[in-house]
Length: 253
Length: 245
Ligand SMILES: Nc1ncnc2c1ncn2[C@@H]1O[C@H](COP(=O)(O)OP(=O)(O)OP(=O)(O)O)[C@@H](O)[C@H]1O
Ligand SMILES: Nc1ncnc2c1ncn2[C@@H]1O[C@H](COP(=O)(O)OP(=O)(O)OP(=O)(O)O)[C@@H](O)[C@H]1O
Ligand SMILES: [Mg+2]
Ligand SMILES: [Mg+2]
Picture (tube, helix red, strand yellow):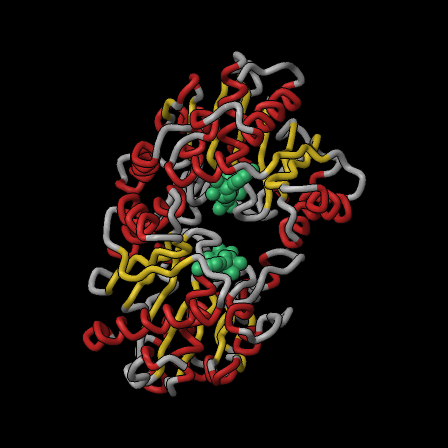
């Protein structure tokens, strides 16, 4: 592994957001693996109903049934859901996160099912409770949390990443991608003004593309990732990004 | 006539909606372009530009300020939040974008409800739906006249298209739009999954990609490029009459 990943012992609290297909899962999955390889404890939080993160983590296909159903029970009056017996956020995360390569743990909100949203709604609500409970959970104080958010701005607006001290907003050199990035940055700054909000330019072919992203978004790119078929080369860049986050990061965790 | 556009995320729904809307307007239709996406982008492919699109989104967002009454009708939304796009297209955004109140009709608006409320009249409605099949599950008979199901030659988008067709079959006329086709093998793959349905082919086109890079409408960048010309023919096919580019 490239040394650039730096000291893994500073836990980071990261949410990754952007337009559909911008590269959120590739960035989240690769960063999670790199930090774990350096010895950091990493919980990857997949809050997307669509598949993605498990593929870029390399942890195999998602289970059909959301594991967090195991931490969930129906309310006595049958309307809505609540914690299962004796459950709480940290325990649910410990018990129902899946093992991914390099020791990364992966907690799923649950995936869309052919039967519709009803088939995941309880697990999905529990996931929301878990991410909120993890913010101050002593059991996870030393853990890096990396959230892969669904496309668009709505989860940032609806407070699905309350743990985030760093928002990585992934933007490709296109207008739609940049407008989405701007919307996310605006909402994230309202939601969490004290966090860092950083633009990651993705799939850039050259310096011109980086400038184009910066022009469309209206702020500088914190890091940029090339169009790259070569996973190893991409990983080096990701590692560099992780290192720079750490260098900047002490105050933000 | 009411046209809705569906498909997996990123397949080209917004490109198809915006360009078909513009082409129809050029041939004399009175067009209302309805952006049904929670992350509205239709302004970009319609050609109002990125900055103007953000202003329109912000105006729709102003409901949050509390000075607007809730549960407006579609005609009110069109009147209050509509904006003008080139060729006389009237554009409107269905949902608020940030901090929606999910229980509220004018916040998390279901675009299908809006399309349902719209009178047919002389107006041609083009609605860019949210990615996936969630919204089309709510389309009943008579809500839309034509559903454009957009797919790319990729397994996942074809799977979504197949499901969409299954759901909408018999409820509305369906035209399958095979977008970003680069060769015969792409078409074969799409036929394999979708069977012997008519596929309306839109070729992979660097002009369309370049338009998104710059935030321009493809039809403004080059109406004669192969992809844009095919989208203009798609508009003709849907309108059942020639459309002037
Ligand atoms: N820097 C890059 N170079 C080349 N290909 C890339 C790069 N980043 C992402 N990709 C590719 O782009 C596609 C989309 O990436 P990814 O799945 O990470 O996006 P996403 O933002 O998570 O998408 P979704 O909104 O569907 O969850 C994938 O096929 C991925 O391999
Ligand atoms: N025929 C084509 N040739 C080349 N590029 C295309 C073509 N059709 C669409 N694209 C490009 O693909 C990208 C996605 O298209 P578009 O935004 O229209 O998809 P969408 O289905 O609306 O996506 P979303 O689900 O994110 O709203 C854009 O960058 C667009 O320029
Ligand atoms: Mg993803
Ligand atoms: Mg779109």
